[in-house]
Amino acid sequence: RTLDGFEAASFDRIVFNFPCAPVAGGADGNSERSGVADDAALAENRDLVRRFVAAAAPLLAPGGELHVAHKTRPPFAWWGFPGLAAAPSLAYRGALVFDRAAFPPYANRKARDRKSFAATDAVVYVYGRPGG
Image (cartoon, rainbow, N blue to C red; front, side, top):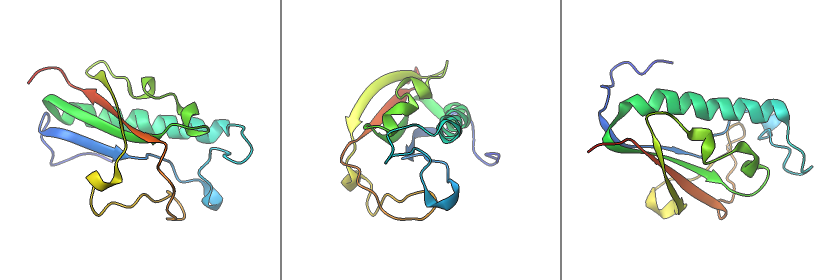
């Protein structure tokens, strides 16, 4: 996909809550019950985040921020945040506790089967573009 119609350096904030590539059979691809990583799904999810950052970073205004909400317990901790979203044009600024109330009427859903999931162990990783 392209981001036609969006001006470079035009957004103060870009938010991606709970990135996760859909996996066949409704699974999230992280082998949550087994405690063992599904290497192919883990690689696909990491690539999803890297592609998002590469596409979103140029759209941030000077001083703008990229926010990525993600769970912190295994298997999700295996993804490699906060370093996963590192980019030359962004600096990691820290993490905040995820508060669903900050995004009304947001409801977190799984990628494939649209079922809700608990986000009590989630944080928002914040990356900023210099300037502003």
